[in-house]
Every structure is written in C-alpha cells, then in structure tokens.
Image 1 (cartoon, one colour):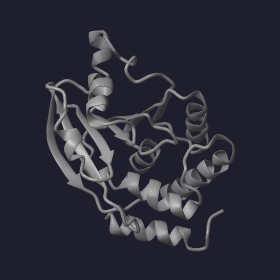
Image 2 (cartoon, helix red, strand yellow):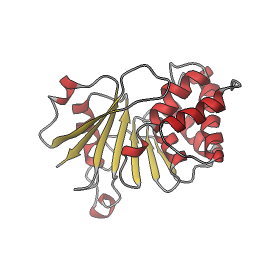
Image 3 (cartoon, rainbow, N blue to C red):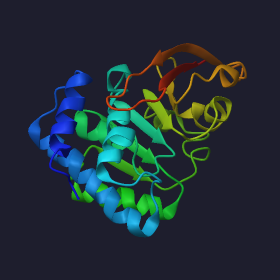
Image 4 (cartoon, rainbow, N blue to C red):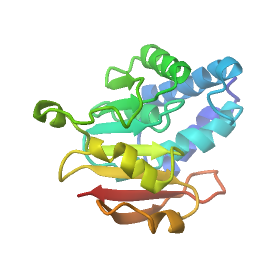
Length: 218
C-alpha cells in the first residue's frame, strides 16, 4: 500500500535529481511500484519489500541514470522486474525501450506492466540476450540500440561479451549500473571494449555507493 508520504517522497526525489516529470507520469511510476508489490507476493520479483523502500532502491535509482542516456533506442538487458527500463520508458515516451528477460515468469510480469501502464513505447522480449540479433542481417542490424543498459546483471566483461553485439555500430554505448566503483572488473574488459567513463550517481534517500559505467564497443 502507498503511505501518506509516498507521493511527496517521489516528488522530492525527482526534484533532487532535477527531473521534471508530468503528474500523470508520476502517478504511473507509483502504479508500477504497486504492481511489483502485488506480483512479488507470488513470484518474488525483487528482494526489496515495501513501496517506500522500492521507491528509493529501485525507482529513483533507475531514474538517476536518465540524464546519461544517449539516443532514442534503449535495450534493458536482464530486466527482471523492469528496472531500469520501465521507469525510463515512463519518463521518456519519445524513447523506444526493449526489455530483454529470459525468465518466463518475469517476462509475463513485464508484459502485464506494459499493458496496465499503457506503455506503447515498450517492447518485451523473452529470450537470452546472447542469442538476440546475433548474426543479424544488415536490415536488422540497422535496428540495433543506441544504449544497452543493465542493472545487477553480470560483471562488466560478461556484459560486454553477452550484449555488446546489440550496440549500434559506431554510436552505441553499453551502460552498467553498479554499486561500488568496479575497479577490478574494469581491468578485465575484452579488447573490443573501451571504458569511456565511470559516473558517480547520487540517489535521493539512498545511503549507498552507486556508479554508472559507460563503455564503447569498437
């Protein structure tokens, strides 16, 4: 259930992130958290319990990366409960967001969320990311992604190996959402990957390290 302060906490968090989102989008963001809470009782989508906790640890955490995403075609790899892809799709209806999730129960949740939140700019793909678009034709390759993002999916090298082929040639970027600065992982990137930068993120109400690793495939 929503607490009396949940709407205010969302508004305050958005203000701290310097994000201006319409009132109807804020309503849908909270509806999304309620949907996770409902499904969580049966399907265990996330270990985080309670909407106020999910607001900080999931929703605001996802929206914190919004200013650092380039391009209008976004892929969320290992989307799980739809994080960060669904918050990004809600915040930016001009983007086309594809959620890639191999777990059938989680993919079923994502499709239900797409329907209930009326997200016309969202696609859900139940497939292993390493198989999707592998060996794509030139026509299909033209539909690759400007940004391929993951949250708690794998270490950096595995992420590059599994999802690097989804990046649009020359312009695509891989973004990995991490907790502490991944010094050791960054030292073991594949030769075809360049570490562009690591951005320190400040998530409102969250007293924990958050970093966004930006990588380029060449």
